[in-house]
Image (spheres, rainbow, N blue to C red):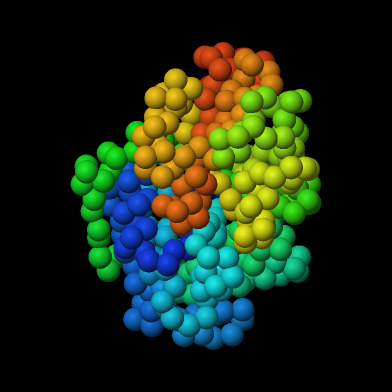
Length: 356
Ligand SMILES: [Fe+2]
């Protein structure tokens, strides 16, 4: 079946923050982002603003920064009703939207009608500087959390052509702080309340994510040495990982036991919970552990894949520093870790150049 809105890839990940000034510094430390374009979006720059179909007066700050394979938009709502203010009120800080499509308005119009027919409404839209139309699709229920963002540059304009109100730069003291190697956003993970398959199918039908693999992670069966807050734990969860170009989404559901997913669901409900951003050696990670602890980014959960030739996986508790987001890293068991796992390797790493 043809998907409604085939994703180009992941252009940018949107995060809601309370204080953009404090957050851009923390995100620069972690990801090495050297500069941010700050846009103050209010009636000066915004026209045709609609929130759930009604005209609205609202304002927010959008801070856009990137480094290597990580592109972020941090949004601080300022005034009025918006999808951002709504999220901050109900969920607190955290990952909010995925910018998956940039296309001319003429291309999006018929797709938009199709989306409406299929029950996917526009939650918020507006035009910035009369140069760029933006849309947030209300996919919260369908995708268990994230909204999908679409940008339509008007003729001759591109999204990056928008003039920032301010540029903030960080020097090496900030950008060289993190010792964990970051390559890119390998995947973003949605935690669901027992509806992994439904959300996986919605991602396929909506965004055209066709390539998936499923994995049942269970302590003592498919995973060993599993720990939670430094103590051995017995947990089980199912995951599906799917990729379309640079857009890779993991969908998780719990089976039993307490995990970081249980905590997330209890605290704020379904939604985007972690990012996988690093593939490094297990030795490199072990050497970093004391430093990570001292920086209040301890390992919160981890384990080895039961097949010892595969990998170690760990989650760093970066929530207090990075707007509620947990960061995942993988340590391959050896250079041939993807041997015989061609399809899994391609989905996991986004690279066609995997060992077979
Ligand atoms: Fe993950």
